[in-house]
Figure 1 (spheres, rainbow, N blue to C red):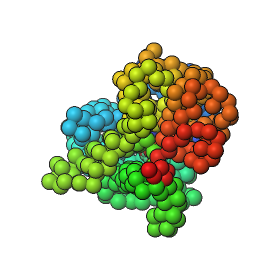
Figure 2: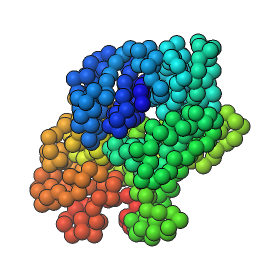
Figure 3: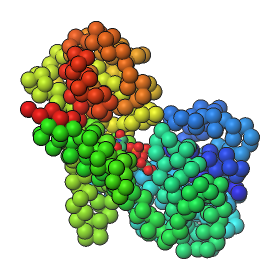
Figure 4: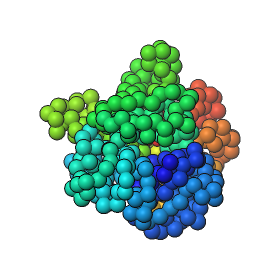
Length: 437
Ligand code: UDX
């Protein structure tokens, strides 16, 4: 099949590459010429395991090409994906200007019958707007609009795309439905889950999934706070709770607050959709507020430990990205933590396996970056663990203790066992782990 993908961000690049890998002829389009030039040279703008090799392989086979010329790509495509950004607008709603601009550009270039697919995360009603936008520039065009939200996770994007739990297709058109089923057939063999529905339900499904997952995390973060008060260990509660087959064990880890390009933005957008429709989605407001507070928790723990004064103290930070296996720092809890520490007069040295480049754009030379985790704790009054990269899980504890000025660890990811850490001679605080007075 001939496919065009508009937007070479996370979703567009991964989707385009995976469609090429299943034998389709894919053109990825972006208005950023420098990005397209880099992609043509095989340089990938993001860190995502396995993506570079997959791009290289499919580009070499001639199935995957990159261009800034949208009309050429669209006019020959049978399916066109819109995968541009939907940033948070001033009022919390999703800003659709890039999606609608892409729709108009597509409309001006459509050839014979084409399926135009909303892949970007967009509020309910957008498929209709995209259709109107295309018709406004091409009243006679032969096309259908499909809502096909993407559920991939950063750091596991390729596996998620090639082997999804489900594929959601929102359309009223049988012709579009058949084409989408054919395009996705190679990926839906395992789960056999290709769900067809109306576009509004498809659009809402994506937000509902992210909101439910975010709600689980905020629930666990509040549960962790209660565990601390009463001397319970949230990790036992997590296992006992998640073993109920109705609940399940995924997404029950308390932490320093969820981040990333999706959860924070999407719960606000869904809240805003509810408000526009006269509903106060109370629960979502709480999920967001709990998370904002949670992002201050590690800092509050340190302030309490040091009796309110962090001035002149030096801290190590392990992990900058919002989660492992990505260099993405959007809404990462490391940002408010580090800004808070600097604001209180402390100094910071940080280590992340892949996110130093991203972090330098945020912090410049206001913090130090070290090549190893151990470098970050040299002479430190305390260590914060913000991202649960595997390489932080089994450090040489004696070496760590020897390097630190004081053996104090604030662990935002509950990587270690509190009792064993005390035996090893550390002052160790996790999240919600039985620190009763
Ligand atoms: C999320 C959705 O999972 C994905 O389906 C959607 O397409 C995009 O948004 P992503 O943002 O890549 O994916 O990361 P995810 O693994 O979901 O983690 C989001 C945040 O929640 C991270 O900050 C993570 O650390 C946090 N998290 C996750 C927890 O704090 N506890 C958990 O138990 C799970």
